[in-house]
Length: 395
Image (cartoon, rainbow, N blue to C red; front, side, top):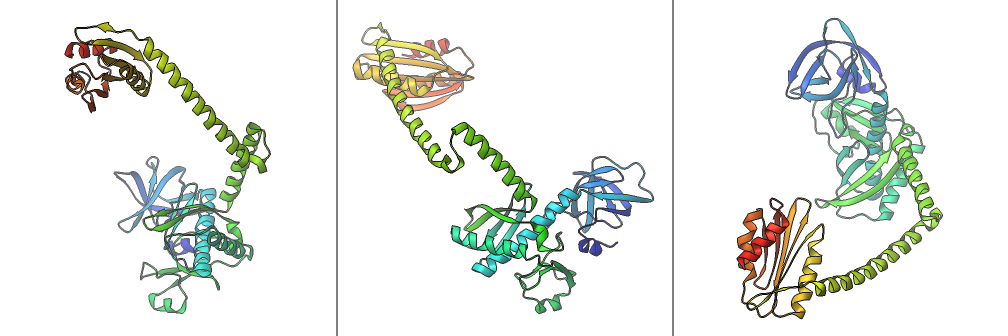
């Protein structure tokens, strides 16, 4: 079996071959086979997995003109004939997805004249980049419907090896990137495309195509979709999720959107009400803090644990709005972080920004603000009470 024959027999599950060499590179141990049925990464399609002489294949790559089969561990005896086994479930999935991509790209080209400029087959989804800056839902639906109609018609998927000179005989969707041993994948009267990937014999084996989403990407549209058994998997998963949500929301499936919107609106109202109550509580808390009378100002200080710095800001702002002679120093420790807020009324002759800048190095911290109000933080490499005392000393 030659490499070319491998491309023509995507349905092969087991094969016999011999090992030409076994080596190790930065990616691990690999073997090079006399003939192979493992597809190497390329053309937007991932590699095949499986086993060689019982050893698991973890990657297949073409490097410097040779196909390297990376194995989980070296093969003890590489002499004689060995058996390779393809992970058929993975192989057939890739066959469905890759053929589905050909069909969908051709559908966009035929129905809308949208050109596909790149393709990627991922573990869960596929993407194609369309050479357009925007796409409507009706356009996507039109291409999807055409693609699924081609699948339902069970059209033959043919492969043919041609020379560069023979390419003019076919209405290619795009020019191949190679000039020697050109392999065409053909869906007669619909799609003619140069491709080295694995494909089924009929469009019916693709099963179905479903477009999931799209987004703008580098001036183009990147479209996400699935084919074949992945459609069933997604339907099963999302149906299960819908069943759970109908139970949680206590609403039938057709009312889930309106029920969810009502819940979100109600939550926003509750959050707004709670925020108002919290403001009242912070006001009472601020007014309850007692200060120590100094020469020409009143010092109000306190340290906290596990409180948002925004709450400290509001407490400090409320105090200085009521007491012109006050200086407020508040410190909080949140996990491994120390944070501070310092504020003053209009009377004290103190530059709090200069005070804070002298203290921040003690906690490898930084902050900002102005002469009358500053905030910042750093590492909890000292106790919060010690940081508070350092601030007082600087004043």
